Image (cartoon, rainbow, N blue to C red; front, side, top):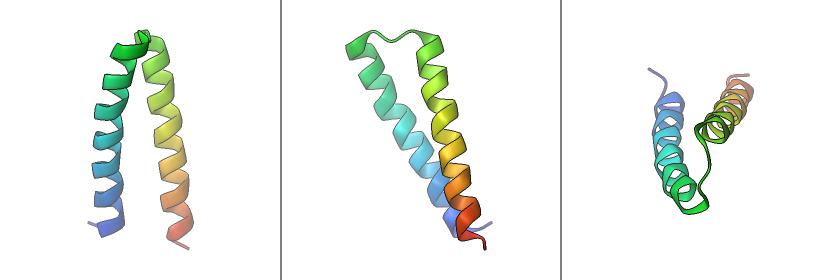
Length: 53
């Protein structure tokens, strides 16, 4: 497995953990949480795709 991909997976878990704490503080609903996670995943895949060139 590519080391950059492993790093992105780790960052995704770290981001999800942090977002969950922020979501509790700001009282986000599950739809807002899912929307932020989907945008984060798309951006991270785009960044990873650019590094593969």
